[in-house]
Length: 217
Image (cartoon, rainbow, N blue to C red):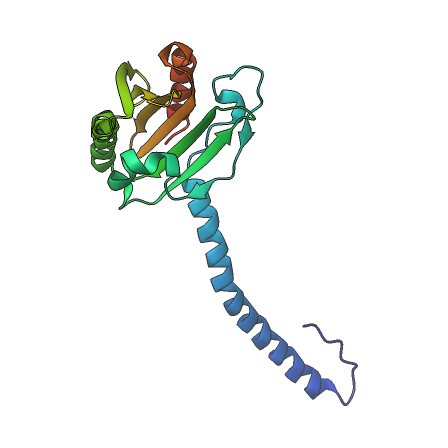
């Protein structure tokens, strides 16, 4: 805090004030340092997460407009049943996308950091999703049909899955899900809508998956 001291008899007091001001300045800098470190850490953590898909990068759904949700920590409810167990030990973030009709989508990203561990996680996620339809076959009122839509040649690779769910009460839904990896980062993209495999935008979804993996690091 600067102080303007007049000359004369206050010279000694002025020198004291200058010394005190210097001391206070040093103390203020020391107190500000932890806050600055915290702010820098927050910025670094934010920068560690690759960007998520934008609404324009999702497959178009009829004439409906996509609404993009906030980036949130944790596993989205729609993915917990099939993939939740594999993701328990990881720090992850996701974003949801919705239309004003019946279509919705999600992107989940896990920054593992280690290439080998990320590869193992991607392998397990692919396996868990494929077996998920078989685990639900114990319910006679729900029939799941699985399709493997193959791999994509992007970064360390991606695989696209599809599940058509038909219920005894007449409803039918189709979900597309992909798992992709770039180095130590894994991403999962999920798309769901009413209808069957004929209604699923497989080609456009593969393009969306490629875009999502290309954004990883």
